[in-house]
Image 1 (spheres, rainbow, N blue to C red):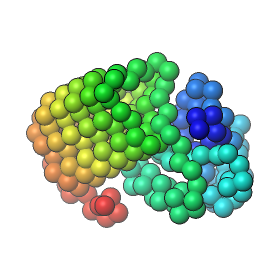
Image 2 (image 1 turned 180 degrees about the horizontal axis):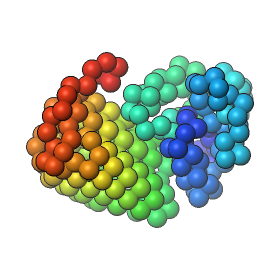
Image 3 (image 1 turned 30 degrees about the vertical axis):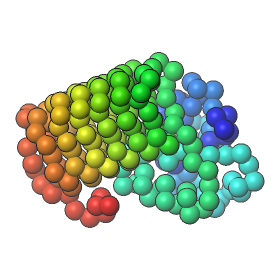
Image 4 (image 1 turned 90 degrees about the vertical axis):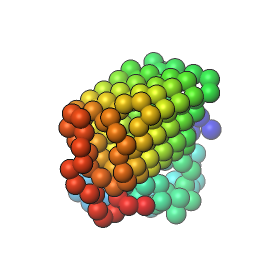
Length: 218
């Protein structure tokens, strides 16, 4: 169903941007979801904030949940797991009207593509990926689930972006590079070599700064 009502995980900047994207797509948003108790009962951009999925009887309504309302890949994964545990319907991909998806390219469940982005041929964008504003993704690139691509990122052809990767604003990724799962690329970086899993890389050219530990690991 592409006209079901939506609730969005996260009422911060990313969630509010997605609410506006939904407005441009003619999709009705009936609530935000946010785990922070202080946000419960607030009204954000005219939309009520609920503290959790159990706060309204969503099962009795034609409602789907947008899980990519936050940029943090680990939080996205957590929200997907909670939504599935509650037996709720996951929203399909949301793509800005200005963006053209060429034949042969595909978007996964819950993926977001924002205004001004350019998706080339034979691109695979998996579930719950965020492609923020003015991003370019060149031919034959794959972006795995939960990744977040920040505004102004340029990804060249034949690049592999692993699960849960976060690429900071204004970064550029050279062709045929592989970025390992749950790694972070600092804003404004130029990545010219492969990046291992669970590492922070930054700089021009990007170099390893430190390992990333904790709950980012699958």
